[in-house]
Length: 145
Image (cartoon, rainbow, N blue to C red):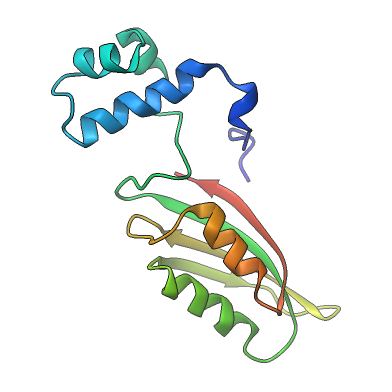
């Protein structure tokens, strides 16, 4: 994962970051017509909105053209990758790229990039579903845009 990104619990972040997401959602859902109106409704300044609007994202809400990159460690067994791909498909993600290493020591590393704009669940729910697959040893969300 790029050193430019972190996955951090909201509990330790300032409240105004959640409000930036709220303001962006107000604009996307046409509940506010201008950035000024969205910022006022969310309780932040326009400056705060502009400063963070392209840097803060919520994993729970769908934003069109969003992408996610997952790294997985799979057991070296038949249909392991197929099971993972079926899981992605059943949650309405579109696979952009797949990279799989040669299995060594009974395991294979897989890197999958997905278009999650039409996904039917949250990223956390998808991760949990992947972890339930018997051939999956480890799942990690590397990046999301």
